[in-house]
Length: 282
Image 1: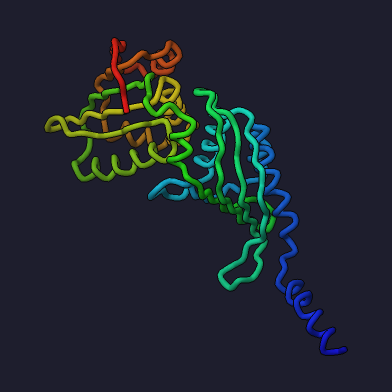
Image 2 (image 1 turned 60 degrees about the vertical axis):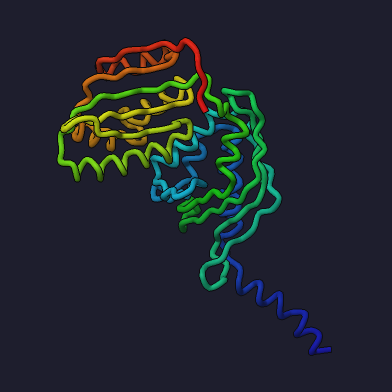
């Protein structure tokens, strides 16, 4: 009888020794973060996030995002989708490298919603994890899902409203400095702006570089403008952009909206707008 009692109690003792006292609090905060996402309550989400957060996006060769970029990403989802809702298959406690429960939270589940621009329905399965500090704020968060599949499912992949911006610039720094900067800058845009189709720097003269930008529509380019504006996600990087290049003029091809033209005007860059007659884009 004593032997049976010991065998019965052993798993319970082991479980209690390997539990984490912060897990219930952290689980509640992780669930709130997703609930507030569905409510598009950005301020409430921010209150649950550490200034030191590291966010892992679901994109190939992507690098971790910091606080400002993470908040900008949340805001982008709010703007892109209505009726956002997460349905969890399961919420699980996470462990450290030794297999001990560390208070972190993991979840598998499904996001639904409606893309504002296309009206297409989101049906996204995936896995998400959250690590926390001693105060219960999220310090690390990772997304694991088919980002390319999601984009193809809910956006117009043929891009009938595409805007192409051709920017003529004079180089202000050495060739090595230019190469280092443009590699970093285009990577930032690629990670932060899913509606940026292409962003390429080309050498078109001894001291001349042409930047060719492609966007799904006018709103996508407006998002880029917001990101480079003061307090934007890459405002400081755009300051370095201006230290590296002198923008001479821009030519926008496609049916630029009045809202886009108004967003460009304060930069006081010589800009030509070329309307679309006909065509397609893949």
